[in-house]
Image (cartoon, rainbow, N blue to C red):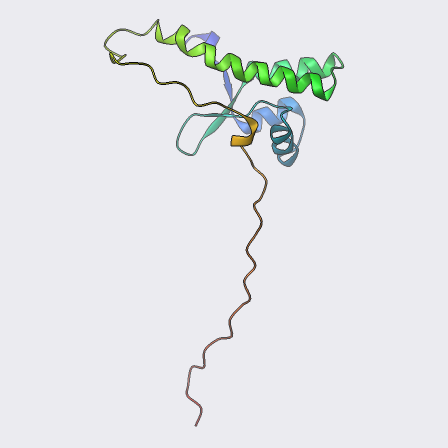
Length: 134
């Protein structure tokens, strides 16, 4: 793997360290559209794009408002869609099947809702008697 791509993706602990925020604040900001949602890298694993995190940090340093950062994050997510054609052109023909390309799923902060859903409260049932009363 070339040095250029080694640090392209960042796992959550490193992203939290870069942003200097807590996990709960990270999820709130993702839901508000202030940080780009993570990328699925496995069935149960996600990563953040390092350049997107650095762009948000740069905007914060520059004094951008929340609305300006939201616009920036939307543009960053749209740019993800543009990456795919650039990389599929570099793959060998053996790796790419000859079929019509499928459109990418539209990404939005709504699809990454980390807030807890309304919990279901159940009333505990009394224990059944072990021995029948005489």
